[in-house]
Length: 341
Ligand code: AFP
Image (cartoon, rainbow, N blue to C red; front, side, top):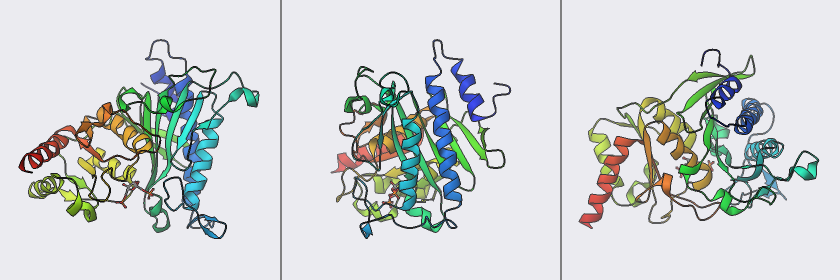
């Protein structure tokens, strides 16, 4: 891997390790890196360029498909990522948190080649957007599946509704004290830090793994009293073991800290919201894929999330993800809580 320092060099060098690789996935990953640079530039200037605050539509605050308030930067990030993805010849369809249905990409209509690309992308263009106005980290999360339907036809929901174990690649961008892109194609997890003076992502965190010892638990404490059985006891056990709490309200930032420092992220189902808050296709699945590659594991309800068959594009799911040993302790608490009931 000598000399494979930039994101593009690394992606291409890794591609050579797969017999029969065509370079299509490499092209798609580098295009995602390009869109991330554009969004990063906008986020860094947010306080100066009048793009803080809520998106307005007909004099009212605008909402996305989930009924959640949209920030101006949510809309900018969605436009940027979906535009870049639609111009990538390898993409046949996109599902974004910000848009209700599948965005079909027909390259023949643009005189750019034949029909529809072979990959579909699920994306949360700006995760944690309520952090923007208070200058705290936000992120982008993406998952890439190979299509199952014929490439002569538009992508179908089934192309997107595949288990996380079948992702061909997944990753995130963290816009924090520095900007990082972290991704996996199923051969480990690698992190790249953006150097704005050069305009490139450079390999800074090769072969990322959860540390053996978990220091941190990340959960919205306001949900503790109504969380599914077992979570409360598990959090008690974390406290007794000297773990500490950290929660930013941006899944990417919390997951990234736990991956580097050791920890577990919990967004359980609650009495009011049995399915929790997080979205299966563009939040939970990509992070489950990364966690698995980094020595972690991921649960939703009582299942290994990697194997769960999703049923709808914007479905929500409880999410527990972190070092595999920590997840085992949580599962044990959940099982014993069920027995006591
Ligand atoms: P937004 O993008 O709407 O801010 O949602 C972020 C998020 O989906 C995820 O990144 C956080 O972990 C989670 O919501 C925080 O939700 P709570 O505010 O309910 O803890």
